[in-house]
Image (cartoon, rainbow, N blue to C red; front, side, top):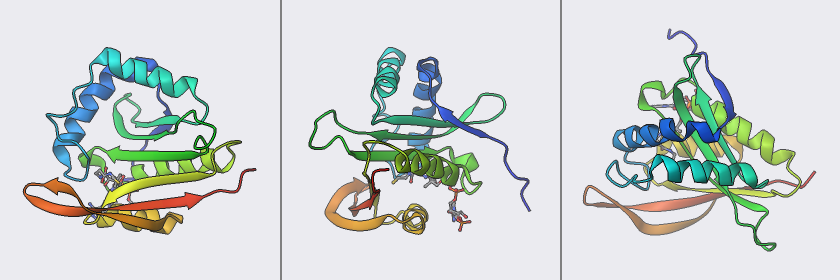
Length: 176
Ligand SMILES: CC(C)(COP(=O)(O)OP(=O)(O)OC[C@H]1O[C@@H](n2cnc3c(N)ncnc32)[C@H](O)[C@@H]1OP(=O)(O)O)[C@@H](O)C(=O)NCCC(=O)NCCS
């Protein structure tokens, strides 16, 4: 049996920008389930820093990272929302874990931290995501947590010459 992995979940700091740029280029090369490949993550460290600052400035957004004791980032989850009164309660999220650490509980911990944040949030009352139809691990995980399928964007993703539907999933939270 594999030894349990020791890591912490924390909010990202602006100073994580450089590490996150390197992180995204790596994870994009490791999975065909993301909406971009390794050539398409083109943010500079400065742009990533500005994005992280924006997450810190807005109360209806959160940027979480999972880190080893060494400080290495091994997982990332962010929830983004608009500032508009009619939609600021609705957050959308994306998650990715380094392939070396898949199946070690990192994704589950990131998702749990996000759900705790959402459940006690004064504004957020809905979370949603988009997942490629063949991403069985992720779909199972989302369903187990209570996300429900809300719709399908047929053949919205094209990977290595093959089309895939994108499934839209969501969960509602009563405001506290
Ligand atoms: C989806 C993803 C975030 C899950 O993160 P993770 O850290 O591997 O998740 P966990 O270790 O918490 O595992 C969650 C469940 O999936 C299972 N699992 C994880 N990786 C698996 C794998 N490669 N094969 C089979 N099962 C797997 C685990 O056993 C666990 O099931 P359990 O709770 O019944 O034991 C991660 O696989 C990933 O980054 N994938 C690529 C990017 C991606 O798909 N992002 C989501 C886009 S919507």
